[in-house]
Image 1 (spheres, rainbow, N blue to C red):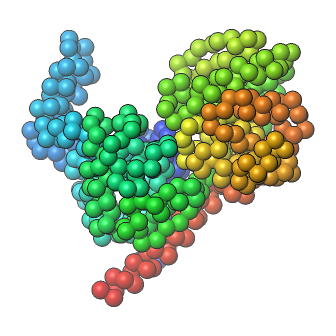
Image 2 (cartoon, rainbow, N blue to C red; image 1 turned 135 degrees about the vertical axis):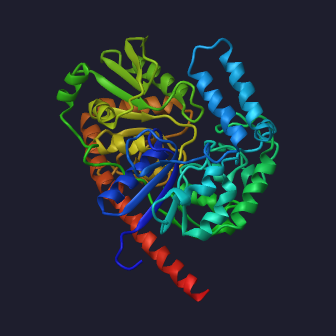
Amino acid sequence: MGNRPLNILQINTKDQGGGAAKVAFELHQTYQLRGINSWLAVREKTIADSQVIQIPNLEFKRFFSRSLLQLKSSVQERSVPGKYWLGEALKNLAEPRRNREVAQGLEDYNHPGIWHLLDVLPEQPDIIHCHNLHGNYFDLRALPWLSRKAPLILTLQDAWILSGHCSHSFDCDRWQTGCGKCPDLTIYPSIKRDATAENWQRKKEIFAQSQLFLVTPCQWLMDKVTKSMLVPGIKSAKVIPNGIDLSLYHPADKGKVRAKLGIPHDALVLLFAADKVQTNIFKDYQTVRKAATLLAKQLPKRKLIFLALSGPPSVELIGHAELHILPFQKHDEDVVRYYQAADVYVHGARADTFPNVVLEALACGTPVVATAVGGIPEQIKGLESSDHKGARVNLYGREEATGILVKAGDAEEMAAEISQLLTDDALRKQLGTNATKDVRARFNKLTQADSYLQWYQEIIGCWEKATKEI
């Protein structure tokens, strides 16, 4: 490489929207600020950045298929009677084999632009760094080829790579032995028929031919990886926690922030943020809502406001408590004010990996009550409780704790722990102070970028040495 800047290509579904997109784009921005040649290739480009590249899948389809798909897009943009059915007909005519495979439950790998992606870059990458590969845009069969072109890093934000279709398997462990007889085909990303065993086998064969440098944001997911069919394709693996922008996410004067948002200064405010929270299978809105109902009964003399950033907007009374469903905020500058205004952030999840929202709330000095699933116990230093001593791992005293961990689906426990924080001002403030300090020490996005850059250099050194020996 000599003294020239490093060339990094990242690949992800989108450039904004969702945790993986935020991780990839913020790494991309940080690399650019460090003078590194960074490109981000995505299925959907929404940001005006010349180094964000839309993967040319449509351009490299056959002329007949491309023409019909372009006509389908044109039809959908107009007010044409029966345009949905016309669009479906055009889609089936354009790619009959692809649609037949999808109907059979096979995961969709028919995306030719991946094989031409390196041709559209101004320079060849020294590192290829993949993030989420599901979302109908990536040909997984290209992994062995890409891993021979340059060192290939794969960062997992969920467990889709390990399974026959789902991004989280809940209590099912069939992903360890070959899937098949799937208990729930509707889990995102859903499939129409049970081809999970075939999907699993295809992935196993692809990974066996690949040379992957694997990253997970938490040990919980890395432990799953070690039990999966991905193992034969891994050259090296590392846990690198996600980081957040601490110049944006930080504490602020709660009274001033509430005044701007129109929130009463004397109210007890709970916050929960998740896209489509009321229907999101991975979140547990019903338990959170039940906990809010119990809190309204337990704190009858206090004004209680529960805010859920999700949309569409609505207001509901639960006893004397107010439940406000607010539109999901697209811009971080708008989201951060709600974290700063809240007394407690509540994260109810049935399955999760390493949610950015938990880190963002903690960085704003807002203690978190969250279900102890996935990698969340690695984000929150859970407060030790006399009622639950020994029931959870990694519990801390009030001088170190940053939040409270509860069992998934237990609304009574969630309500009791939230009530403890809402009625003990000293404890709540102490945990908030601890949270801000802990996030700055462990989850800074600049530290995350540095960890990747250091590993890139180590990997490139080994790669160049191996190439010379060949």
